[in-house]
Image 1 (cartoon, helix red, strand yellow):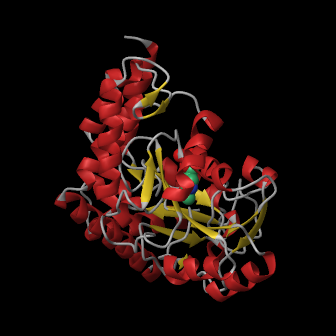
Image 2 (cartoon, protein in one colour; image 1 turned 135 degrees about the vertical axis):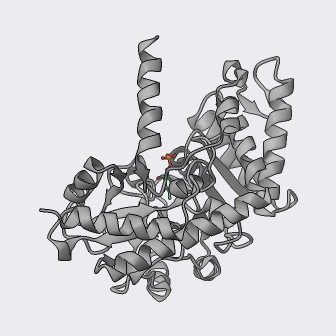
Image 3 (cartoon, rainbow, N blue to C red; image 1 turned 45 degrees about the vertical axis):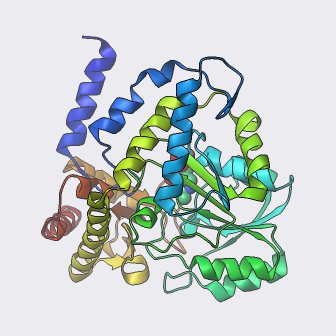
Length: 383
Ligand SMILES: Cc1ncc(COP(=O)(O)O)c(C=O)c1O
């Protein structure tokens, strides 16, 4: 057997055997894998549908049109108001393309800080985004919740061109209407980065960013349960420059096999079973949070509304790295994460982030979450 397939077999086994609580991961269906491994990988398709630089794209065009249609249906939006770009290779690229589509170099942007739950591409200094635009950050209050009055104050002083509503490690719902009111009050555009919560939005268990956001970016591989790819939805007047930022600005030929996989995932997300699944994701996260609290763990914002939760390990005298290592040895995979107001550094922060999308795909329910919480407690309590 090829060495690569040997490694692949080992990874399959690892994924089967561990309890995966990484909130940004999931298990895709066999059909998504089939589309990803399909002959669409052989095709160059630079340009958008029906405007290609290469010949032989009649079925690629049909595919891109169909996936675009599925995006409209999944988010319940209309093509007269919004345009869709299904080509970004990943969430990071989607964000960078969105910025380059609507901003000039050094323009002001207001977003959530990484330390309080934002993403690197929301202007962190180590990301290209933080080097070419002028970012200021908002965060959460002492209670772990976003303080919208504070965002309003910063926006008034900072006068950003763009405000980003979006998070990687925030366990509570986002109030997109409030974000829009703040953005409108300073004439800023509003971008929602729903990479983490896209599946919750499609399944109706998190408020939609539509019609408030001018731009919505998302990954497709987290709660949406598709392949590693991304989408940009934007108001019609912004779409031409955003499309140009994707190609030829940043990317070359789109990965049409990934776009096919996104289409399959969206077809699945439009079925009633997905609603049940995503409801269970949220129920499981609550059950996990409740049991962890009963066992004495300190949770950021004291709980969760969505698919993830953050544990502050400071009272246990453990760091995020130590906890993650201990849990991994016993087959529980989590990720170390900064907690709001963390005094430690990102490579060994004070917290861990847990999520339920993957274990819910495997069919786990609330009673399993209670068992997992107890197991986490036992493992971390051991010297
Ligand atoms: C909110 C948010 N935006 C963007 C990204 C980037 O996505 P990718 O890893 O596909 O580049 C992530 C990934 O973790 C994310 O959480």
